[in-house]
Structures are given as structure tokens and as C-alpha cells.
Image (cartoon, rainbow, N blue to C red):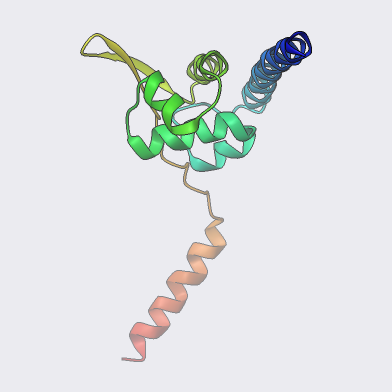
Amino acid sequence: MGENAQFYRDVLQILKGMSSQLDQVEFMVAEELRRIEGEPRSGLVFSDLLDLSDSPRNIVLEVSRAEEATLAQIVKAIGGDRETIKSQVQTLVQRGYLIESQRAGQKVYRVPMGMRRPRQLPASIWDALEKKIEKEMSMR
């Protein structure tokens, strides 16, 4: 009986490792697509979270809520296998979703929040708005 349980534990560990590798490939493809499309990464905007699968997204959200977190704090908050989460955190750092720094001799992670690029509205919209404002002002 114990032999069967160990077999399934081993299979589960292999699957967790494969899941982590799949997340890394997903990050690399999304980042390459961003590069090809000419989108610079100047910080994270929340729409970037749509590129992530559930587990990495939960890590980023947790670090964002905490403002700064150690790996131990992330593992405690998220739950799950420490090595899998560590691998995902390292991938998130490599891909720019998290920033790693040292605080009191410990690695801490934070989310690099960026400003959304302003939309470029057509001049005709600005002209129409200006005319509407002028009309409103002349009626007073």
C-alpha cells in the first residue's frame, strides 16, 4: 500500500515540475509577442495579469496586496509546494512581473507597477469637444 502511495507522490511531483515549465514557456512566448509587437515593458499594468495562468497570477496578486513579500510569506499566503512556487517566482522575476531586492539580508519581491500608456485620441474628437465646450460657454 505504501509503495503505491509513493508512486503517486512521485507522479504528482513530476506533474508539478511540468506545470512550472509550461508556465515558463507561456511567459517566454507572451514576452516575445510583446517584443515583436513593439510593446515596451515599463512596469506592470493589471491587464498584464491576463497573460498569466492562475498560479503565477495569484502570486503577483498576493505580492501586490502585501506590497512586498519574501518567498516564505508568498508560500504561506498561497499555499502549495515551496519549490514550485519558488520556480514560478523566479520566472516572474525574469519576465518583469516581479522585482527582487534585498531587505535585511533576505530576498523580497514586489510588483513593478507602471502607468498605462495614454490613448491617442483622434484630433476630431478633441475638436468636437472643444466646440461643445465653446457652445456651452456661449449659452451662459
